[in-house]
Amino acid sequence: QITPEISPPSVWTVTVCAALLTALSLLRPALPSPKAKTALSVLTILIAAAAAVIPGNVIHLCMMAGMRCRAVMRPAVIVFSALIILTAAWNILLSNRRGNK
Image (cartoon, rainbow, N blue to C red; front, side, top):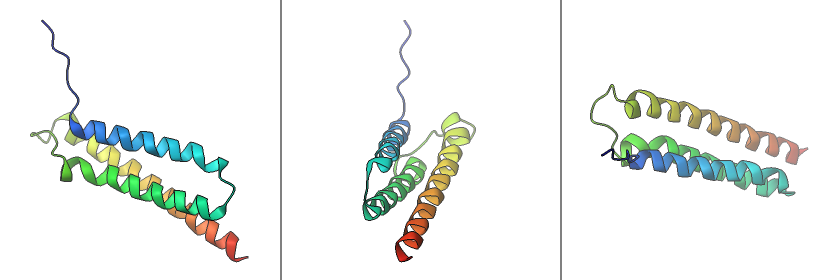
């Protein structure tokens, strides 16, 4: 009998964060207010930071360093979270520059 593999909690956490980030990115063009877009960018930074920090710190990963969750998933999540954080911070800076003119 084959038993299905259960995903670890870290995968579910990153998946939920990814779903939230996708929803925020789809919502952003619909917002008319620059302040609302800035608030959305701040929320994006917080969620991306949580996605980078939770696996491996709050939720433990695989025991061996060579396993997929440590060798592939965690570094990829950190890199993509950093890119999302930089993009959201850039959006905040651009929004503030446009607002000051």
